[in-house]
Amino acid sequence: MRDPAPGPGGGTRRFVFLLVPDFTLLSFACAIEPLRLANRITGERLYKWITVSEDGAPVACSNGAEISVNGDLAELMRDDTILVCSGANVQDHTNRKLLNWIRREARRGAALGGLCTGAHLLADAGLLDGRRATIHWENQDSFAEAFEEVTLTKAVFTVDGPRMTSAGGTSSLDLMLKVIADDHGEAIAGAVADQLIYSSIRTDQDTQRLSVPTRIGVRHPKLAVVIQVMESNLEEPISPARLAKDAGLSTRQLERLFRRYLGRSPKRYYMELRLQKARNLLMQTDMSVINVALVCGFTSPSHFSKCYRAQYQTTPYRERGARSSRSGTE
Image: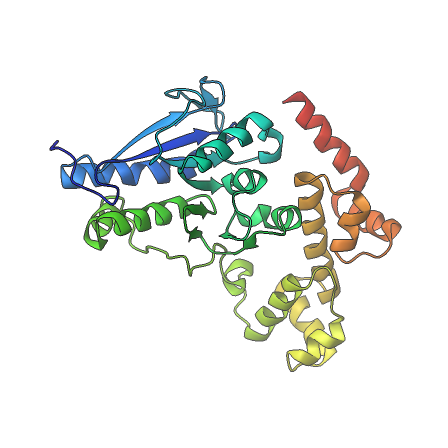
C-alpha cells in the first residue's frame, strides 16, 4: 500500500466507531466495509478506523455476536470522524458518561455521525439542535416527541454540516459512498459500490420506507393516497367520510376498497395505525400513558386502554411495566 494520498483533510481520514450495546451489526458493517474497499481499490490508505466502547470491553450487538474494540472513551484527534453505532433499546444504553464524551469531542472539533439509532445519542447530547437528521423509521415517533429542536426527515441519510445520520440497515452504505465521493470523487465511490454489488445507490432525497403500494402489496392509487393521509394524521384522525371525499370517492366505495384489498374497514385500519404508534411510544419513551393516548388521537384514556387491549391483549400500563422490567434485567 502506497503512502496516503492527500485527502480533504490533507492525509488519511480516520473514523472512530463508538459501539453501543445492542448496536445493529448490519449498519456497522455497511459503514466500515466501504472504507476498506476504497483503500483496496486505490492502493492507498485513504481511510483508517478504530472501534471504541464505553469501557474498552467487547460489545454485544443486537444479534448476540460480540465485537472486540481498540479502546475506551479516550481523547481523540481533532480531525477524527466519530460514528455512533447503536440499535435496539438505545434509551436504555444512553448515560451521562457517553453523552459527556460525545459533547467533549464535538467541542474539540470532531465531526459526528449516528448510524441506525445513533441519532438519538447525538440529539440527547444537544448536537442536532437546529439541524436536519434521520433515524430508523421505527424510532421516528419517539424521536420526534423527544427532540422538537431537530428537523427530522424520512431520508435514508442526512448530512448537515459536521453532523451526519443514517437510518440503519444498508443506509449506512449509501452514506459512506457519499462520504467517499465527496472526499475522492464519484469514480472511486462507484468502484466501491461495484465491489459490493450495489447497483442502486441512494441519495439523501430517497426515503427509507417502501412506497405505500409496495408496502401493503396493493397498487390502487386512491387507496394509497388515503393511507398516506391516514399515516400523516394520527394525532387528529380524519373521518372516513372526509377521507373518501378528499379522494374523490363515496364512503361506501372507500369501505369496499379497504374490505377488498386489506380485509378490514377504513376505521379499523386507521385504528391499527394509531395503536402501532402508541405502542412504539410506550416501548421507546417515558411519556405518560395519558400523553401517549393524546398524541395518537385518543381523547379518553379509558377508550385508549380498551382499544389497546383488544389489539395487543394487554393494557398500556402493563406494556409500560413490561418494558421497565425488561430494561431492569438486561
